[in-house]
Length: 208
Image (cartoon, rainbow, N blue to C red):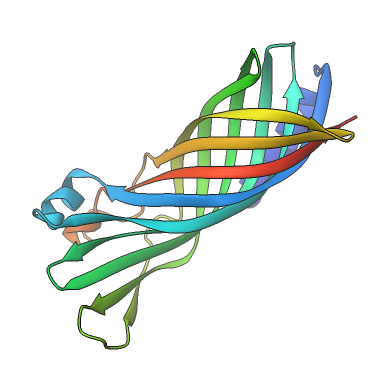
């Protein structure tokens, strides 16, 4: 985690040397997440994939290189929930992570299109909650994470509305993890598990 933070700070400093404008801001929003992967698909075996509701919040810096191109490093907290319906049993998996993306942003007309890699640092263990159709209290378990640092990719679009001395930013993004959280010897349905999520965020940015 320290290496990721050092890289984040160094990138901000180096990019600012060539910046025509730098804006800072924060955002908060909701996300809908679901699991995928070939082993997960086999595990579902015809059962329903559940899109769980979570949330996210973070801070960012937008470093403009030209009028149409900028870099946007971010530091986000993610609360992701996803699961499945297994006959009369509902299973929800919860993952908490710090996300450090470095996005390339392209501005055309009034829209900003962005994409880029991200590092996810998984916090704690993955929790899962089992709820039966019968009215009983949910049962909660945890699963140990083998690899706490995973790579992801983000793509999305945003719109900035001038407000006061800054901008209100509306953001829609899709993210997907690319590397494994669990080693091959773990539970079979988790071996190549991938997190997917769609997030809707609103934030505020201001420049210097």
